[in-house]
Amino acid sequence: MRAICAAAAGAVAAALVLRRMLRARCAEGCACAHAGRGPTTPHKRAAVRVPSTDEDATPARADRLHSDPTAVTKRTSNLSWDEYFMAVAFLSAQRSKDPNRQVGACVVNSDKKIVGIGYNGFPWGCSDDVLPWAKHGETVLDTKYPYVCHAELNAIMNANSKTLKGCTIFVTLHPCNECAKIIIQARISRVIFFSDMYHDTTSTLASKRMFGLAGVEVVRFSSQRSGVTLDFAGMC
Figure 1 (cartoon, helix red, strand yellow):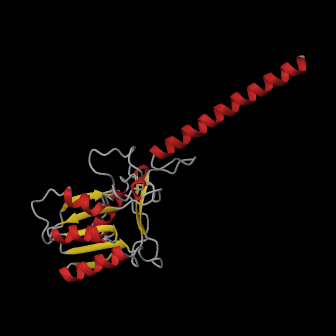
Figure 2: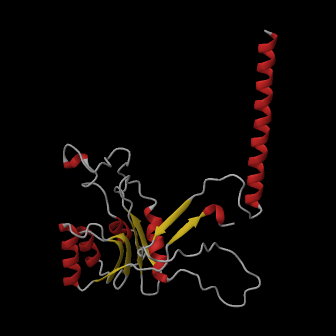
Figure 3: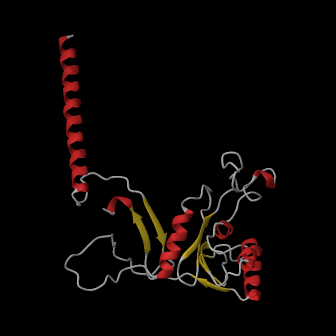
């Protein structure tokens, strides 16, 4: 019995020592992170990444926000206007609760000012805990398709400008035929899209046909960057 008690006491003591060591290591990692160095132990980071359209592009250097008191020339690694607006569209898509496809849109006027942002989701007042998110069901009413509002529609409806005539809309996915109608009716003159994954569907083919007839310029987004990462932990 004494031997068993001694062994148990030894196990408890070892566990306490290990616990103190883990606490010390965690504290060291946090201290390093606050000091601007990499943490000793990995920490979960909130990040949003915009993928590249060019698979062969050379990965861009991670360029975190920082100040360089010795610099005498302007910073040249900044985002281009198109990269910036497309990144905003991708960031907006992160608000979508659609478990299968998150789409974002950003409307920009001729002065390069954002006048509308949107993402795919259900209409105002319709609970996303009640309506279905499924792609397939017993009937169409058991799927998301009759209810969801696309990103383009929401971006146009959320616009803070009296008119969108002559504006450009940046979209993470090529607009469908229904969104094409809304874009044309809003007098938006240019569409810049990222993905064309549904290029062979009747919806997309009809969309492209209407854009061509209406004189709306449609351009596929292009960038030499491997992506844009928003890393909250690395911002400070």
